[in-house]
Length: 443
Length: 135
Image 1 (spheres, rainbow over the protein chains, first blue to last red):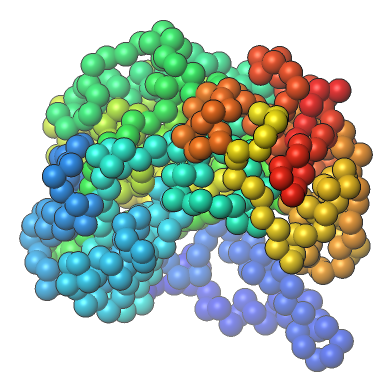
Image 2 (image 1 turned 180 degrees about the vertical axis):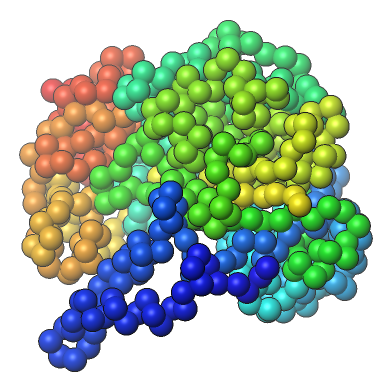
């Protein structure tokens, strides 16, 4: 499986040669390779328009251990201790021990996180990383784990997350500049942005307002997302909020940053979790069903030098890469975990991921389509809107998708779940957002 | 929002000084690339579209329209905490480029997408910070 060439098995050299012949040189003997990568990608685009990587990374690795810390409030524990408890839980789930870990990735705790945590946990991995692109970071870590495993650098990667945002009373969404611990404005870009009072909610509110203006998306449609998440949370014993809510409850809740009400915004909880990602050889020896990483992709979106589409996300590129790698079609996905920092985030993500047309996200989330029993159940654990949101929810997308694919989700199990998609978006600073997509499946 | 400036001040760098100097003169500086012709904001010493360093300064007419906005009712940062509710907006300037700003000088409930606005400069100690008000 791993190590095989992508579609057609064309070795890279045969792609280089005709390209260079076509482009000629720069006039000084140096080959003109401007736009080379773009062209290369285009040549490798499949018939259905999805990007194809040169090396087929599908099933290069599997999630073999996953653990979600049950806490939503842990004032008696340190953030670092939550990492440890999650690491132990995930390794126990995998049937492995501390000594099996040869790669470690994390984000969000300590400065710098990778050194703080390898010291605290007393690990000496061959590979460490603390890529930070906000709440989506752990999906970026998963991608790195797949690459490193495929390359033979390491075989067993541990990814951990822990946060005591709630017990430390961190204003994740409305903290503005203070949430970053910043006291001054950096010349670039803060001085052009934060000086106007940006908040995390406010950034998504700008998207929501534009989406409503451009496509006629209604507040009631955004509210339907919050209602669906709460319905799912009622089936999750660990969820922070489990009492049902209605569309009217959402619309009547306090306005935080128009058009987003309090119940359009995720909760603030403590929380932690970890996953273990391993090579196929390791995965086959583990006690639980391996959850294969069938495809993954990444992207970023930002101010675009003043030319941004305020309804767009970085998902289209990430999804194209992930679907192309996996060979899976959107209609085959049994359930999706979509980062729901805000109700609008789900609407724009479902559009960017290609589950509906751009502008149709509002009607798409209505009528129970994204609820258990619907066409595409989304965030079956109750999401960040109702279950937990300690600041970086990407980790919990992977954990709940793993539970679903192992058929361990109990009352909220999607029957016969074989393929799940995780779509995470993140970005703690101003206008910039990351996106990562992981397509997961079981044999 | 207007009045004594109690929010964090913008800081200038060697790269961004011309932008803030122009603000002190009452001008909103944009940049246009001589290589690719595109206009950009925020201010930087190269073209973000093509990475050419041959960029010329363009003084914006200061006129534009609200592209999107939010009325902020909660922000815990000192200086903003006291200023709520305030309008954070993306304004599309006549030159075809979007910039951020606060819309001031009107009721927060009066702001709409498409509303014509023009730039105004608010005193902030040694600096002047560009904002927008209804035309």
